[in-house]
Length: 102
Image (cartoon, rainbow, N blue to C red):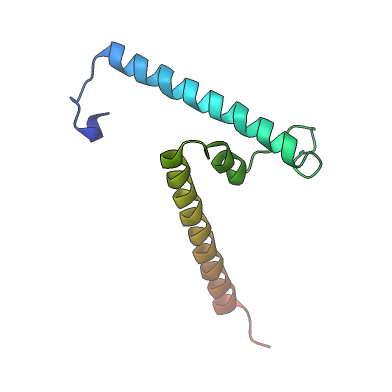
């Protein structure tokens, strides 16, 4: 919270409240996303233990009713994809650079 202009040592009640709100939000979002994932594609999203695997698309879709959150989540998802592409390109360059010539 200090990074957003609050005091360096915020009141304990404030940090407790923010912690409870965030925990509740994340828990609710995870539950909603899991329901959505299970309803959409039951077979392909189960892991070896039979648990539902969440993907970013499930979280983004569960936020679709809140335009601001949905927009931000979509933006973050795109940034993550771009970063993955950059990392893949760097790895390919490294492999090509260090591969032995024939």
